[in-house]
Length: 237
Image 1: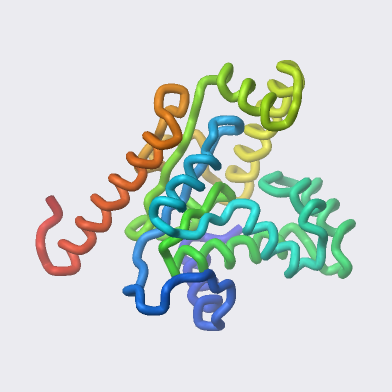
Image 2 (image 1 turned 180 degrees about the vertical axis):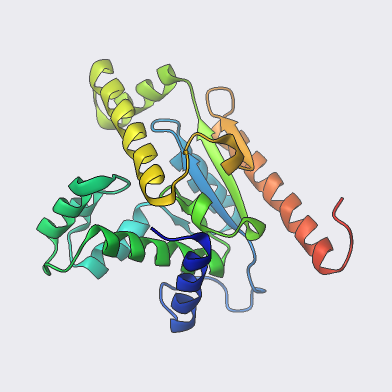
């Protein structure tokens, strides 16, 4: 288990070592903000993240995080997906079974995930999806967003995406949300459903993907403007 202070120290060390670069224009000013997007299963949060990334021309890290970790842990990314955002001994057993080295443990997996989140977040100008990014990253330079939707809509979306009947889709939604919640509780000692973890909570049953993306970007611009005023010695409005 890592405190936020310990997490920051890990991230600083990773940044100094030059690990986990992501593409960005060399002439761009030093980035300051990151968007950490949490989502209910089937809410369409991943679609919102991709649309935000497209509009800002920022990279989006969702399954891309698994690509990095799979290479580090020497496992197939498809196998790593089966333990992603899942807590407990099952994660340990699965990672150890898939890894080439017997030294891979739950602590190793989480430590590397945390280092990756912090390194990308410190570089900024990217969208990080799930996996506790909204807790791990510094509050002052992170816009934390939660995308939710009605259970009916979430079941319908998962059914379409995964070709599941309503009963199967409902079971998938329930189990995925439960596993993500337990992952956050176990590793960060936080309640995934606590609204105070987020700056913005969006209901995708009432707002389109485009509308959600617009609200995220508007909120980001407001936070960036306030931070700029603070740095210039002005009182935030």
